[in-house]
Amino acid sequence: MKTLNTKILAALISLLLLVSSGCEDFLDRYPDNALTAEQLFSDVEYAQMTITALYDLLSEGSFLGRTVPLRGSLKAADFFHFVENPNRRFDLEYKYGEISSRAGYAGYLWNYSYKTIANCNSVISVIPDLEGDNNIKDHMLAQAKAIKAISYLELLKAFCYPPWMARDDDLYSMGVPLLKSNLDNSNAIENPPGRESLDNCYDYVIELLNSSIELIDKSKVNKQYLTEQALWGILAKVYLYNEDWQLAADAALMAESLGGNMIEKPEYIRSLIERFNSEAVFELYYDLNDNLGTSCIAYYSVRSVNSEGRIDVNSVGYGDYGASNAFINLFADEDIRNELFKEDKTSSPSSQPGDPEYSARAYHKYPGVESPLVHDVAYIRLPEILLIAAEAYSELDGHDTEALTYLNKVFQARTDSTLTSLTGPALKTEIFNERRRELALEGHELYDYLRKGRSFTRDSSHPVPLSIDPVNGRNDENFHKVVYPIPQPEMDANPNIRDEQNPGYAAYQGAI
Image 1: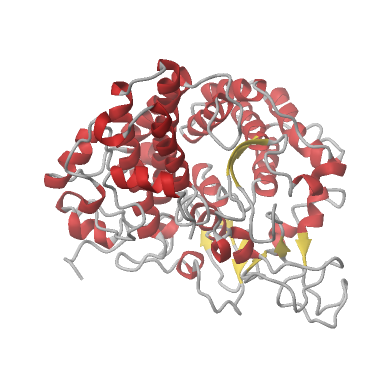
Image 2: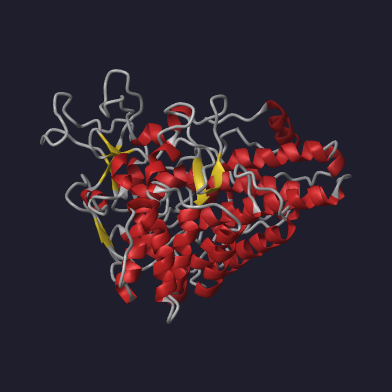
């Protein structure tokens, strides 16, 4: 588990929040007292360490460091669980086995999201009363608000249906509980909140991000932290999810204008072991002293290979997940990303590439920076921003040319070739497929299918067959499991949410 720096931990303890307790009780996450600036911080410099602690919460394995990326990928069609997987991690998610009382990593994701939100509310409440430079205080407020926005956004993606479905049917219109202030934290002790509408939740995330953009120090460019560019990029993502196409395009172009460039094809593989490369916008930072260890994405998804690209006695990692035929076949021969496919653990040791017994389904998206087990995790990158612009333009009448231009900025960097003469549905499909290629194992896959109303059927390379159709298959026995259920401990502790379980899951039956 990622550990907190001692000084940062002291700051969090002073918040009286149970950051590392592991408790999942809803009520325990909301302190019943509002701390003053004097109680919380001695000065602005100490307060800034607590902002760093908020980033530490985001980077937890139970949050953005592992659960969000792997859940989003394994519940779709491009990656699968090997049958030989003895660890059972994300097994329920992959097999669509979640039920109301047993839902895989749902409780952890809910828990860490709301712990982060509660921390943000406490910090935001005291910063205005601090003594110190107002510009520094504004920058801290911007980061705290943006981290809260990210926390809500990931809750909405994991526990709620996309906005178009809410507009299509009230059954899918529930969002998540909103706690907007430290006072809300306190009030939740006696009267914990029910679920807000999905529209209200998205409006609040947009409000937080716009406020953050106004407050952020525009001179800061360290990609380990949220910058103006990152905020515009995340705002573009939210507008895209909400199908506000022009706003999504405008925000993406603003983000693009603030720096970075696509990495040329010959440099791409090397760039993966370069921290904060020119495509990075905001990434979660890990080093040798502070990392997820055997819970990092690389350890789960691959076994490391030697200089010859083979697994040997020195290999590390579980290597529990493999790429499907459909994903492998997405890549043209000249695509540099083909070089990320390496030998997987099911391959015969005596086989050679090309032999029937040789299998190369391990996708080395995270090769490690300081060691095979230490790698950063991107939350938003320049390629995603460009593909947001491409998708948004493709949905606007008369803008296919711009859409193709932005698609080719990514495609050409990976292939040294361009796509031509694409318009209408064919263009939209190619943008969708480029998101699958470029953003693989970053947690987008399932939500992309849902928000675009696209169906998928897992191919024969999957040990667990499945079809999901967001438009015509909502009555299928598995469809409701595209979102997590509200966790049982939350319903035990919060009577105001017990009648608001996601459709398809069993109604609340009382404490277990």
